[in-house]
Amino acid sequence: MTAIVSGSTQLLGVIGCPIEHSLSPVMHNAALSALAQEVLPYVYVPLHIEPANLKSAIQGLANIGCQGFNVTIPHKQAIMPLLYDVSATAKAVGAVNTVWRIEQGWAGTNTDIQGFLSPLEAQPHDWTQSTVSILGSGGAARAVIAACLQLNCEKVQVFGRNVAKLEQLKAEFLTAIPSNPIHVHQWDVLPEHLAETILLVNTTPVGMYPQINQSPVTMDQLQQLPKDAIAYDLIYTPNPTQFLKDATTLGHQTINGLEMLVQQGAAALEIWLRKAVPVEVMRAAARSQLS
Ligand code: NAP
Image (cartoon, rainbow, N blue to C red):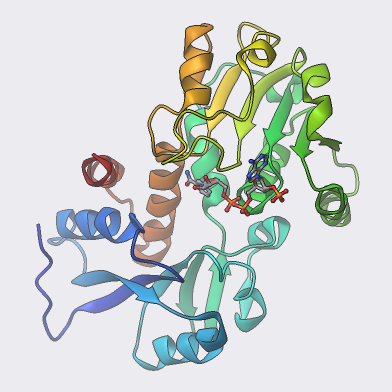
């Protein structure tokens, strides 16, 4: 349903550069339409903001009465010093993806952790006895690490190809949480650590459209996972990725990135509206857009 914009319509949005491929406007506007009888009229728009204009853009958004916005690449870190308040969660991740109005200006948090955790909530695993292996050490990996720390995972292993980045990542999380279970490794030792892995998470773009035949792990490597291990890919296009297809072939439970995307969006909308939001409407809108 198309939102009808009137004189009382409130503004929400997502800032990024580029922004035209974002699924967020479709998801959020579908939910806002479904809630039309219960909340003020809102519209959620994509806002292309160049890095050099970030400070003046968010000041301008405050000036025109914008109620809140999501933040995507490349502004997730850069926006942090421009906010009056940043949640402990966002500080732990080192990135903000959701911003809302407060009296003094803007406040920000990170809902990617909640998004990532949501599909894991129903899992029977005792995470305090579990080893998680994370492939990649970029922005999404940081949210996954913070999520694993929330789960109190026994061991959180991060595999990457850039040693300096891995060490920096570990040092930053060490500062935030002194007794942390994080171990960083170069990519080539991954096979040695798969037999102890209960949750294997791909946070690299390997396998994302259009490289749909690629996987961050070989079939031989996957065969070393315990039978009850879960394969989790943050990628949502294609669905399933080659990584998840291979894991399914070997009998593993799989989770793809769509639910994380939907749940981080739902968590943001709940912050802005201060009420429960129709997650199933957001999921259906995202699926429909992707197909
Ligand atoms: P990013 O900050 O650029 O990080 C990407 C990471 O992948 C880096 O550590 C990079 O290593 C590594 N990498 C890239 N190509 C690789 C290759 N060929 N082999 C091994 N490692 C490789 O990106 P991001 O923001 O974390 O996003 C990563 C993926 O997660 C994307 O596919 C994105 O769509 C997905 N994602 C999904 C959601 C969701 O809601 N489902 C949310 C966020 C992100 P170097 O550091 O060595 O370059």
